[in-house]
Image (cartoon, rainbow, N blue to C red):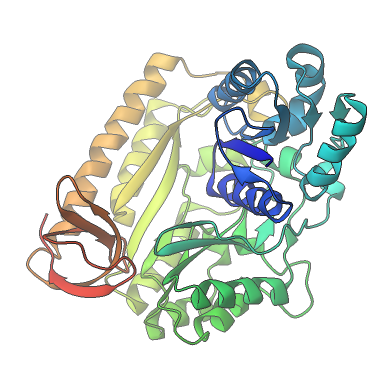
Length: 419
C-alpha cells in the first residue's frame, strides 16, 4: 500500500489546493500516513520574508525526516525560487503554481528514472486556470470553495501577481457543481476563496463575482455563503442588495484597507482613496446595519511618517471597523516597494503595529458588546470534549461558546450571546 503525507503553509487557497492534491493521490490508491510515507509534498508560501524562511526550513525538514520518500515541492515560494531549491535543497520534484495537476504523472516519471524533476514554468502571467477537481477541504461544518487564481492588481508591496500569475476564473459550471456537492455532503457553510475573488468573471463571458454569489445563494439547503476577502471597488450594488435581502449570505465583509492615508495608498498603488472607501462602507451599513467589517492594515510602509500613521489610525476609527489584521511591512525583493527609499526601522514598525492591535481589541469589544444578552443563531462547528464546550459562529462571525453536552456538528441553534 502506497502512502503519503503533506504540509501546507500560508493561505486558505494553499490549504484548498493541498487537499485537492491529497484527493488526487487517494484516487490513485495512496493512503495518508506520516510513518515512512512514499510521497511527502509541501505547498509553500512567499507572502513575506518570514514565509520564505519557513518554506525553506520545512522543505529541508521533510527531506531529513523522510529520506526514503519522494519529496514534492509546490507553491509560491518554489515558483520564484525553484533554481535555488533545485541546486541547494535538492528535492525529487519541484512545481510552482502550475502543473499541480501533473504531479501524479511526475511521481510515476520519477519512480522510473530517479532523476530530479523541475517542472516550474517561468512566466506565471501566461497560466490558465488549473482544475484540480472537487475537493472535500473543510473544517467540519464549513467548507472552502476556490473560485479563481491569480491577481492583476500589482500593489507595490506584493509579489503574488508575479508568483500566482494573472487573474483567471474557474468555470461557473465547475464552481456550481462543487458547491452542490458540498451541500449534498451536508456542509452548511461555504467560504468562497481565491487569490483575488472579486476579480472573478473578468475573463468569462457575461459573468462577475456578484452574479456568481447570487447563483450560489439559490442552491437548495445551502445555509450560508461567506465571502473570504474582497476589495472595496468590487462590491457592487447587486452584492449590497444581496447582503440586505438574502439571509444565507454571511453578514460579514473583510475589505482590505492597508492604509488610511491617501499619500501612502498612492505609493502602495492601491486603486481607491479614503473618500471612496468610506463611501462604500456607508452604503453597505445603510443596507445592513449589523454587518461586521474586518480589514487588513500594513504599518511601516516605506516613507510612512508619524503623521501618515496617525491619519491611518484616525481613519480606522472613522470607518468604525470591528477588527483589524495588522501586518508590519515586509520588503519583498522584486517589488517596487523594495526599491523605495526611507525604509522604516523594525522598532517603529513594531510600535505602530502594537498601537493598532490595541485599537483593534477596543473596536472588537465595542462591536461584540452590542450583541450581549441578545438571541443569536449559531452554526455549531466543533466540540471541545475536555472543556465540554460547543463552538460555532454567527452570520457576522461572532464566536459563540455553548456549554454542555455535545451538539451535532453542523446543527443550527439559537442561544443568548455572552462574552
